Length: 469
Image (cartoon, rainbow, N blue to C red; front, side, top):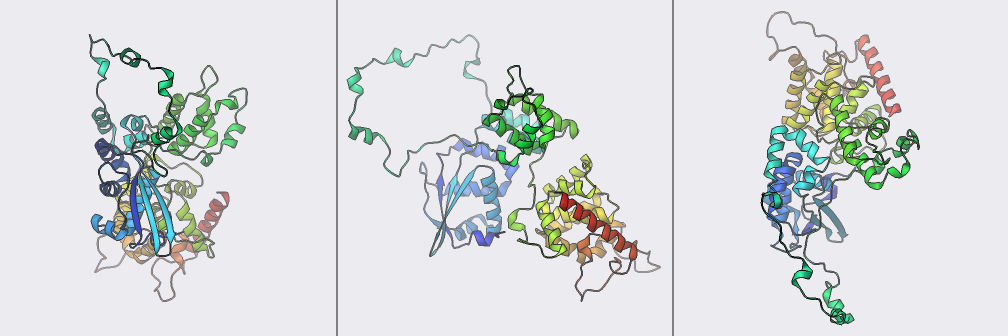
């Protein structure tokens, strides 16, 4: 997969444009509603690009990415990652043109949703509620709402209509020739400065297996005409939001059919939310990157070794799915998911790196996720700025002795007396692949027959998981 430096260079030029006039009120929406979901770096990038637009204009002057790096005091890799998040959130559209002297980009800023659109979105509002908590969510809802103009008692509307104020004119007065008709339109290649409605977040319906869903529903229960384009969009969004597969979605849909045999979208949302909260003890889902971002992948197209196959597997698998795979298909517990979520949010580790951490810790501690232990290693990896699967594997190898001492509650190795024998550990398959010049330590990766047996078991399990996916 392409790296950030293959996509954008400091010398590449860009122009900022706007998909519509941005208002000062948008700043509050972006700051209080979007920032908790996308983070301050993304908000800073959006505001910086916005600042390059002159007042009431839709285009900026061309400038290089080096200028953007200087103003934001950020490297191009972080800017590129923030740009992708803005694109995914529907706040930015990116266009590129390759020329002999280099590439040029157009960054078209998209207006955010209105507060009403955001709080009724069905996805972003749920993620925000989960991120900021009930009290802050209700405070934000109050902040972005006010009483209606017609809510004051005793007032009666007396507004006059158009025909009550203006006189009618003869039909011939409204006729104009072709020249005047052309004068009414914007010049060729131009558009009137204005503002279009912000586009809502929509998961591609192709991501959901509608064939399997419809195959499990009888026509007598729900007619196929009930699955309108809007209903399909709602189903695909809810499936992504709550992690619902086609078979589980069938029962949820059955509970949202009204007397006219139509699918009530609001009832569908409520049913999906109730199902998720029942399954997860009244919790709501968090907005997490599902798998390793492509700019942090190893770029392995055709794995040639078992280790490369494992790298690809850990890059394309979500931490939640890895837990399921490691436990033979069992759903992970609420506590384990919370540990993973906190590691990703607080330590800001990428999903692929978290996968290496989870596999290492679980196979070394008898398939248990100990919160304090995994957080200590995660904190170390965060300080080391580990962002790729291979870097995480290498660090786990080089720091294994230290991690053993942390697992046993030691701060420093004992300097006197008999050393307590170290238990032979079951470790990930990639851990045993050492360079020839590396000394063999007490992990027992080459000498212990029990270790070899356990390692083969793990290899068989991983092959089973990958063949079943």
